[in-house]
Image (tube, rainbow over all chains, first blue to last red; front, side, top):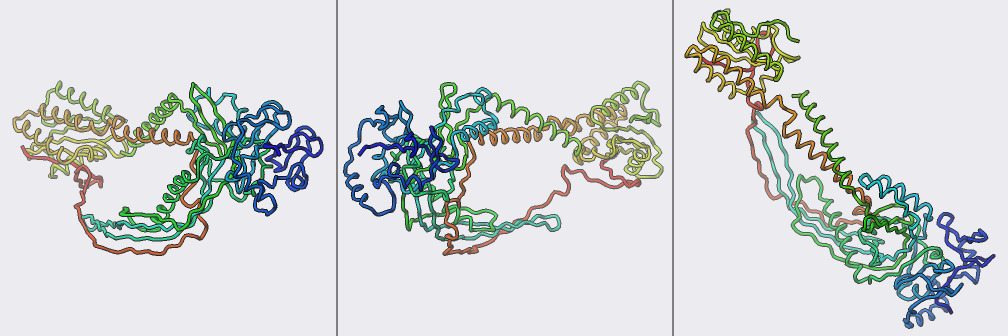
Length: 360
Length: 224
């Protein structure tokens, strides 16, 4: 059994790729289109029992052996033409360097690297380019030269690894609140301040808090492309990988969990504090979040990645492959900032000075 | 705007022709630079009125003042009572606070006591020019510059912040709907405190009164 897999057209045996627009698989050569059911029905293209999810079949035992067999090959080869695949230590789906066939490295989806769910790409490559271009045009302080750069074709569609966390927490808040009232009587202004001890406790449950499981993907940007719409989650199948790159995680769940906890604690403590209403000021004496439950899971979710190098600096852009949201490290032209700031200053100054002169 | 109303009216001949034209020149300058009308009136017949009422009425019924609020001042040397009175109208009321009027009156009585009528008038006009400086040059008012600076910096920062992309996740994005349960809610009143402060009756401290014409005037005076 080969370590790699290429999904093939039932008619002409050319490689198939998943098409985000139709949510089906298309053949580049004969333009045939197949649904998941058709793919599953074909012996050529079924998901190997090795990595199918949730169904009980003899594959599960094989899976166990597969897990014990942890030797990885140094290089993977295309089973269409034998050439080497474009892959690094974490690549799990890629393309053949020579024949360009979309190829899946099966072993990198097995055992603990087997995702439970995936959100298939909703946006195709062309749409991703359009979204990036439209977004970068709107970045007010980006240098004009940068906006005109033609690096757009280098956008790469990647299934990125995510650790997903479900949690049930108890949140505790203790603080001091004030309620202030002012009124005038005669020639005096009165201020009445009432001081309270405030206590709040509650329980909250969270689902599917994502944490980026790839060390090389920028965490800040990966958080900015959230949220994904979980209605589109599908039980994982390698078939969706065809035509895209995919990465497996290299950040362990124990590390990712720390990030998740930070986020959960931020959400929960704000949520409980917000229930103390009606105070003029509210200070925190003590707050605490404790975990009743914390579960992890492993999903793949789609992104488009672009590295736009400008003046010897890497500018990374990420597009959410489902919602189309664009985020990135846009360069900022200081000249444009100064020009803008100066013109706003002059206009505001004139308006305020003339307005003040008229009123005064 | 400027009709041929006399700015310097010396009924007692205490000022020479050259002194009157000098004062006239100064008043012309103040009208242009400060947008304030100024009248200097030396008389010994105030028609039985108080210096204050006579000064207010002379200004109002004489049609003095610049702009819709008739901004300006009148300087009355009332020889029948040996009293000086400064009457303010329109924006001059706020421009010249009670304390400033007091200072101007004190300087006047010192000079008038020595019969230095020209010097007193001249000093009065110099004071008008000086004390109104804070109001007119509003363009360079540091408050306006401060506001403009704040707005331009805030807008620049706001637009720069959106260069990376907007954060869409809020505290309840990943919360299970209806899973939030409050198990304890206590608001315990401890104590209260009330303070009181006196309110300033007028900003800049200019007291006003109404003249017979119904128009408000500020000002003050003194004997010499």
